[in-house]
Length: 90
Image 1 (cartoon, one colour):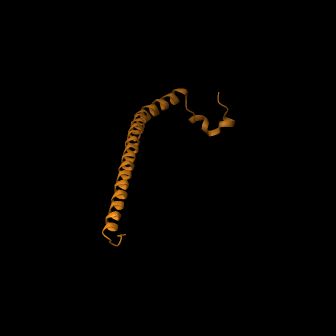
Image 2 (image 1 turned 90 degrees about the horizontal axis):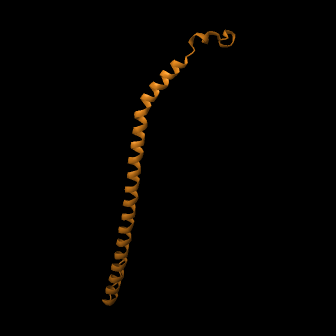
Image 3 (image 1 turned 45 degrees about the vertical axis):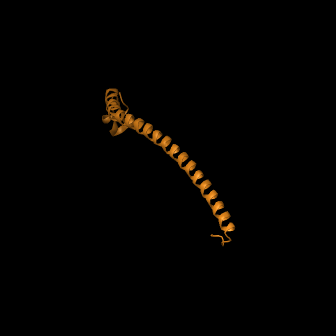
């Protein structure tokens, strides 16, 4: 018997264990597919992160090579200008 002094007007609206189990079942049925979608999205984001990291490494290597070639060409042009007694281009 529920103590109506403590629970008052709420005593008639209490959920039974069966009600709670039914609610849990519905929630699991609704949340389950969302959990799988979140896991799938996490895996896709992880793959994209790896691809992005690789692309950044590639860009860094390319930039290093371009800078090396630019520096070599700049030095070479400087020698040519000096040999031809030209004013240095800047």
